[in-house]
Amino acid sequence: MRSNIKLLFWFAVIQILSFHFGFTTLAEVPKNYLKGKFYTSVKDHFLVATEKMTDDRFKKTIIVMLDNDEEGAWGLVVNKPIGKVPLNLLINTSQKLKNEKKELYNVEIPIFWGGPVSKEQIYILHSKEYKNQSTESYKDFSITRDYKILFDIAENKAPKKYLVILGYSGWDDGQLEGEMEIDHWILSELDSKIIFEEEPTNKWLKAYENSFIRL
Image (cartoon, rainbow, N blue to C red; front, side, top):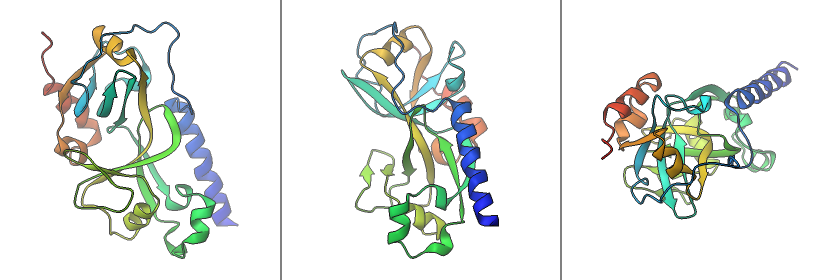
């Protein structure tokens, strides 16, 4: 009975946090957003919110930009911790039935808010020494998205450095560039130490201090 109450409590917490952070299941594209010229340089950089940012969800936010092209852009917020959630709430029923490590289900894992799109999607951003079949390698880090890495985290077999992130940040074609042209965002050099080692409350300032000067 107590375990059921605890699960219901955490479910309610996630729903409240989802409302607070504005999670949605579809990309939010304003009807009349300012469409800017495509920038090839956004990928593999930090996207850093400026003091002119008007969207409360993204104030003092830094985003690891994973891709951008003429069709749009996406990335993961890395400085917005939500809290700790039991592993049981991060995996679905079919995965639970296939896995016998039930003693790990109550291990609490720290999670971050990755953006307002697709709150049900989990991304584990981590150092490159860890790899399984679903791992995608980037320049300074990797991303793994299957539930097996969550069990490794619970068993202390995780990558040396990692963030468990719910949801992502995405933009339609030209939307991000339009926001950059009105100075809501600036670019900064990607730094894995800021991602994994800096305290969340310090990440935005560190990235902002390293931002590029617009010409």
